Amino acid sequence: MVFEKVAPQDGDTGRRRKGGARPKASRPTRTPLSTINQAPTEVLAVLVFGNGDGGELGLGSAVQEAGRPRLNQFLNPESPSALRIVQLACGGMHTIALTEDNRIVTWGVNDNCALGRSTVWDGGMRDIDGDPEEDGELNPLESTPTPISTQAFPPGTTFVQVAAGDSCSFALTDTGIVYGWGTFKNSEGKERFGYSPNGQVIEKQATPTQIVGLSKITQITCGANHALALDVNGGIWAWGCSEQNQLGRHVFGRYATDSLTPDRINIRDIKYVACGDYHSLAVDKKGQVWAWGLNSFGEAGYAKMAGSDEVLLPFPMKIPGLRDKGVVCLAGGAHHSAAVTADGQCLVWGRLDGGQLGITFSSEQLQDPSVIRHDERGKPRICLRPVPVPGIGEVSHVACGTDHTIFITRGGTAYATGFNSQGQLGLGHEDDVEAAQLIQGKALKDKALTWAGAGGQFSIVTARSNPLC
Image (cartoon, rainbow, N blue to C red):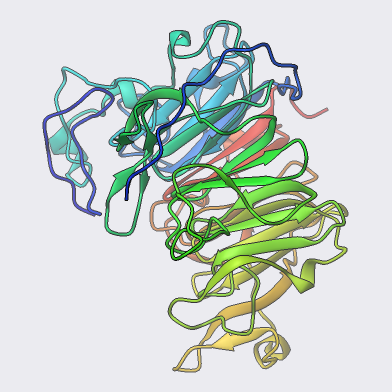
């Protein structure tokens, strides 16, 4: 990946990665709204690992990698001066977090304003692909967890959840309002976030702005370059890039809608939503799991055409293998997906040739065409239906990075699998892993892990602030 140096703008560090008339947006009104969401209250210890040469680890300007989980001292609940985190979300190369005292904290790459604050640094610009020893220290304004100014939000705003994509970030309030910043980037590298009050396209939103058209929202989530919001009535709203049909609605042709403006998807009674990089997932109140968007490796659960170059599901379809499983957690990567059931089973499906699923498939499974699809050379490539992950016990949470997966067990331990070229599995080496392996390390001693997040080349796990009893 190559970066070129350009003159920095507000909220920009100077690095760049390759890569019809619109209706005017109305100004958001400031009318009193009732509380519909509650903020989390449990303070978390935050442990990070993987590659951080863009500040992704949030360990300060001198630390660019961690082979095993490392406690982030800026977020250590045992330190009186640290930020006290209650919820996090990992983007492709940045992280957003919510604190106990209602602050939004960000760190990582800010090329496209994903941090929601200015990180222009007098220390100069650094080529992210260059030699760290030649380039010197990281930008401290990116590599150190830092709150966004409270002046970016109306007085009295209370936050309950945050979400992050590749270069976009969002925050949900207790009254169901959504704020966002950064940008969505399509396959041609074109950047667009939304519209100004006079209807002009905003390429990059440097500071938080209210997402017009969303109200009474109870959950938000992001793919690489799209976002979903779940409302109090069980309706899903989607916006962002739509090239892989990840918005689940028409954005081309006769019945096209504008992809940058949130609009409803035609399914109802949803209770939970999740995103892969280029596909979307949802669970309805009857326990059925739906998916749409990119399905080239069966990641959206449609087995029939999985394996072709560009298979897209234009609208939500049910995943048969997850019906009545009691799914409580969903996650998606670039080409694989995972689900956790109420009884602690973790099921995975999609691309498997990089170890993303954490399973060493048996001979019987490999020879079953209803389970495994092989490539033209006869090598296993796709798991066509949800399959349980063995050997890791009961699972409480799962996170999918681009090509790796982190499992959190009910016993408070973590397992990792998949691509590991930057140490994003936290196993102390950089070898890819096919079957899920236990993450160990001194920093995990006496820690009860509760959650995991997975970015492109880094990962985060959280633990209860009190040690195991």
